[in-house]
Length: 371
Image 1 (cartoon, helix red, strand yellow):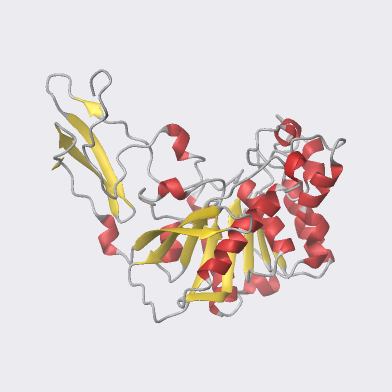
Image 2 (cartoon, one colour):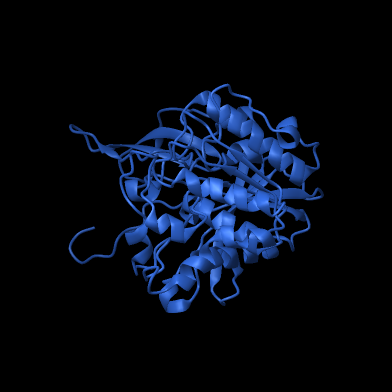
């Protein structure tokens, strides 16, 4: 590209070549890390990394970004029942178009009925051609793990507004997006409309708790480290007891239309904080809820998980809570990740596949001695 000339199209295809740090998001999503193309110092050539949803990252050499010479041939996904990805568009209740990624197993059979798990945060559709790494679940569900076991996973984008201006709280924005996506996917003959679940972490956990207490669309829900009482969260310091570092107050009062901004303080618009607090709607919940929230959470107070658990149990609603002593805002040890992955799979298998409830759901108890 020289001067005022139009840019030249060099390549186009279903691949990912480079993502910036800002596109990566939190460390609790198992996608590839950024790799910036490297220019050779003594030659007109570049080292790049290419991947896609069904192609593990591999390195290539190119001189013109038209022809690529493969330098590696890593393909661990070939050893497993991998996945395919489809970009789905649908119309939401507000008339706007929604967008998300539907992951299906490689051995997909359109004559069968599949359960669906929805996972969300802000915007995830830009990850269409990123390679989702298989592994254990540390916060958000590991997509390849569940898809390879016969689940469909859908990751819809959510469009938020400033609540003080629109009257629409973040939880309702999520329900508008996820709920309409669920209804749209239900029209597909291979989607089991009676066996859909929601799962989210942190802000996604907050949205999960809201939807679990404001909708009867979902057969099960799992929220991890979510805010369940916005009044309490605004007036508490984040972090474990004795090591608090910040508060949610400024985050909630911002008017940027970002993820949890109400655009007003609790004294200016207490109605918005109350409306978005899922603990106050626990008595109306029809969705079995699994909570995972750790005492050492440095971002969202553990008390908010306990509050939701007590609210559900007080109203005789099906609810379970997991706590890991070595965890924080997510899980960090393989032992804890394996334990949570197994329990989450058992929980969803029970409500979405009709499997018997495991002992820990019927009798309580622990698997790891330190939890």
